[in-house]
Amino acid sequence: MRTVDPAKHEARRRHILAAAAECFATKGFPSTRTADICAAAGMSSGNLFHYFPSKQAIFTAIFEQDGRDNAALLEQAAKAHDALEALLGFADFMVAQTEYPHLAGLMLEVIANAKRDAEFAALLDRNDRENRDGVTMLLKRAAEAGQIDPTLDPVAAANWILVLIEGAFVRASADAGFQPSKDKASLRRIITRFLAPGADAPR
Image 1 (cartoon, helix red, strand yellow):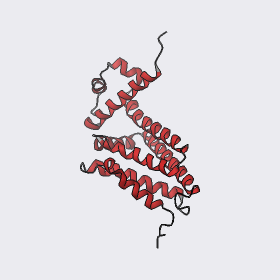
Image 2 (cartoon, rainbow, N blue to C red):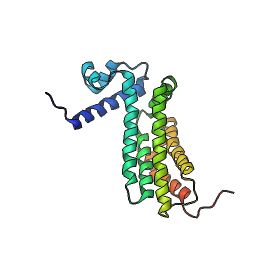
Image 3 (cartoon, one colour):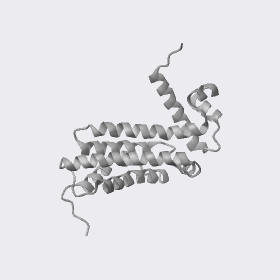
Image 4 (cartoon, one colour):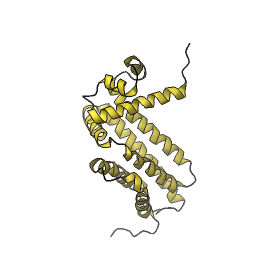
């Protein structure tokens, strides 16, 4: 019996997802054929279907993988000694993804798929909740350690931090000149000043 190398299988799977994401972003989901994905990934249709049963399954898998990658980073961050630095590291990781060259096209396809596929919309919602819960947990730890303002509501603060991060995706997709990944220092400064102990309360 042929044994499967887990590392090679995972690498091949990620290669397919990257190739497919580019096809979806540049051609649009409806116009992308499995043949296009096969050509981009450099494999036969039989090999492709060994990994994924359909075009929709491939599209969904892109964002399932995204959720798993984010969850793994947050799980690692939860074990970090410095919760605030771990939070800033997560923000860096997220904003680095705005470097994707076909970001605008992929975001349009995400919106369109979410409208026509309830299961896909539920996946996006689940990914979002997991990100919020992970950031909330880091904020609670940072508050307990005296690193941030303990009077802040951690859930509300997490939501605003994610608004800031997600807004970078929207802005980067609309303005090619805006490159948030190259100015992560400003993002860090905004977040740390927002969270800083002793910051002026709103009037």
